[in-house]
Structure formats: C-alpha cells, structure tokens
Image: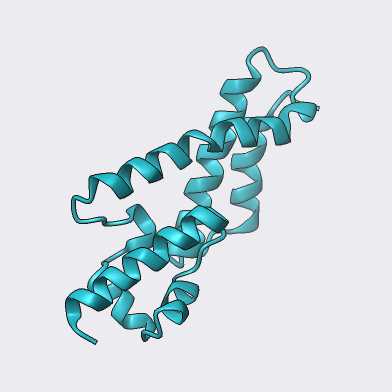
Length: 132
C-alpha cells in the first residue's frame, strides 16, 4: 500500500471510530486492525493521533470533531445531575469533573503513566466535595 493511501486509510478509520465510539471508546489497536496496519505505523504516520488527532489541516474533519466535542458536556451533565443536588452550579461541577476525567484518562491510557489510586480519589473528591 502506498504511503499516502495508508495515511488516508488510518485517518478515515480513526474518524469512523471516534464518531461511533467516541474519544474514550476508541483504541489505536482498533484503528490499526481496521486498516490492517501494524500499531507502530499508526504512530509513524500520526504521532499521537489519539492525543489531539493530528488531521494535518483537514478543516472538515476538525469541524466534525469540534461538533462531537460540543456534545460531551451535556451528556456528562445528564449522567451526574442526579448526584449534584447540593451544588450551586451543577454545570460548572460537571464540566470540572469531565475535564478532570479526560486528563486522568489521557495520563493513564494515552501516556501510559501510573497514578496512585489515592491521588485519583483525592482529585475526584475535590471536584465533588459537597455533592451527595
């Protein structure tokens, strides 16, 4: 397969996975499997594809990703809303929790870093302090 075709195939598979499963439901392995490509080749063509989706200036794909990202907070807010009865601004709490979880997932899954469970619990409880 030519380099340009493989690169496009990876990009198309990534977009399909992100649209269907979301950022956190997508794995580099699933993208590689779909394009029949060794895992290291994904990183070769798209250094850190899952970190910030290097779309090489493809504005259409960036707009699709931006639109998908706009749906994240309302979905997270609906999930945690029943537990946010004692907060003054539950949208802010949901947004802070979503950002914290994204950061934790990026550190643990994408960057393969170890974070002690106690540290994770402390950070989450700091955001949820005062919630039921």
